[in-house]
Image (tube, rainbow, N blue to C red; front, side):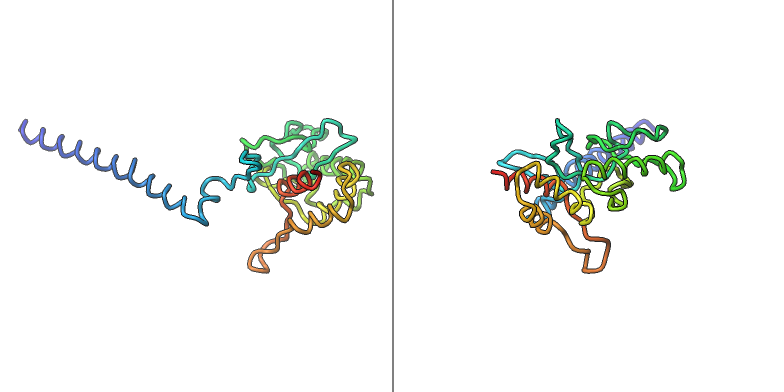
Length: 213
């Protein structure tokens, strides 16, 4: 009786050790190794973007830069975000246009007819129109609506073009230079027909920064 119990215990321990070795060490190392294959490594490692050997962000995560002086704002901006430091789902004066938290992914969970969201969108339109020096009806939809993740890295070509004049004025680059940067960083639709065209905001701001030097 005792001998059979010992045998079963020993067999169970051997199985635990074997599964720990296979699933806890061998399998993770194999998955990691496949992820380091050229062509896959960037995605597996988080699509990190580096400048001069230093990581500055991820091409998959939208960060909204905030100028120290709002009247001299040199940055392209992302969509509003529920992760922004100035966002509230209950206060229609908290618009989600400030710096956002890349470590947190969150939607607003507000329905399309929620009065807070309706008021926020109206206020965002006014704020962005003022920032860009345009009329309210020129502000595109993605400029005033947050993505489901709150971390959408891309904006529409229309929203990027809306910001060209301001970025050119503040950075000292010509409108033609900034327009070319936007065009160069505009991606097409997947397979030619899936989704919408987009412009990566991190890539835009890095390209503007590089053009200034």
